[in-house]
Amino acid sequence: MNNYITDILPDTSGKNIIITGANGYIGRELINQLDINKIDYIGIDKQANDDLPHMTLNLADSKSISYLSSSDCDYLIHAGTHSALAYQNNFLESFYEDLRSLRNIFIGLGKKPKVRLIYFSSSYVYSGISREKIVNETTALKPLHNFGLAKSFFEEMIERTFTNYVIFRLSSVFGGSHSLHPNAITNMVQEATQNGFLTVWGNGDRQMQYTYIEDVVKYIIQSFVLDPGVYNLGSDDYQTVLQTAHDIAEYFGVGIKKLSDKPEGMTLPFMENNKLISASNINFSVNQSSHMKNYLDQLNASL
Image 1 (cartoon, rainbow, N blue to C red):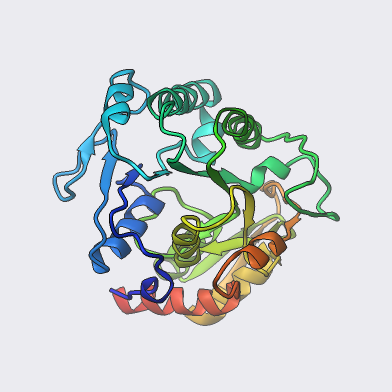
Image 2: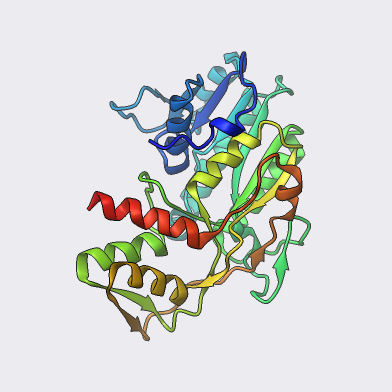
């Protein structure tokens, strides 16, 4: 496996890392990189996995408080939250479980002010803002989407309860091999390879800002040394779904079918990355097109 964090690793000797959502998309990609670099961590997930040596613990259960209270922790990377799809399908249950989990983290770490909490919010906090605008971390939020509403609420909870935190507002993530929930890119790749064509809803005018999974992991590592605060994390590209479909179709040599009767998804405004660029010790060169080619090469080689 590609070791892509070795050159940017801060000194973690004597530091203890806890990763929640260890069986999930971001959690497993991060853990793979820590394993390659022989960095110790404790993985937690509510779902047992016999193939992975993680602790089975539901953070929404109150007994997680005693575990966190007694743990020796320097960094808590909280990747154990529900997805946008879960919030779309079942808002109340998703919100309630994520709320209880975060509450228990606050109580469990309440007497440990030096612990750094790393949390994943979403670009959906900017839903409700015109696609014509460019947004940054100081933009006033008025989210329309359920996921964005929940994430903006949890951001405020963290800001009012914690001082040592880093919050990443992630755009849609692609790449790697552990994605649990499909996005437009994975859907189109599956269609292209299985059906010999791919479909686009409507005219494909929806614009998307993606983040490659490897860049997400790099910036998680950087979060150990970033100043506390909220950071946008999205690519420098802002392509329509149709443009992305053309890239994938051309790679696999297939055609595109437009489904004019299908409603297109929500277009979120473009997120500036300037704050993260200036604060980080690594070059923020997130380019969807170059990462897409690498990702498609990996997928093609596995077919």
